[in-house]
Image (tube, rainbow, N blue to C red):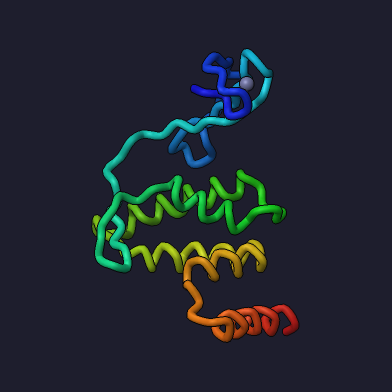
Length: 153
Ligand SMILES: [Zn+2]
């Protein structure tokens, strides 16, 4: 596996443990070339959940895509990768238990938003602004106002 820092392929596993929910293994690796440390996860490959997008197109649920969206929203916020990975576990588990093979992308977006709302208001607004594609600035301000009222309450 390529080192994310220098691209070297050789590395050593320095720690390996079963995840809390026992659905996967988390490995800490150390690059042989630069000594950089990074984490990999190993999961059983299971039957994909199919996501139905707004325009009706279908695609397999992608943990990576959801992670990217969340990470973008959480940039420079005080939210650790562990919190995000734990949430992705929770989301995937929920999807497998509750979806009947297909689920609309809107439901997933709303779930992620609810979670970000709990975690961090700035991350929430960022995610919501991309996800909801606020039609105009007034929608956006209305959302911010709701948020501020909640905080002042
Ligand atoms: Zn390296």
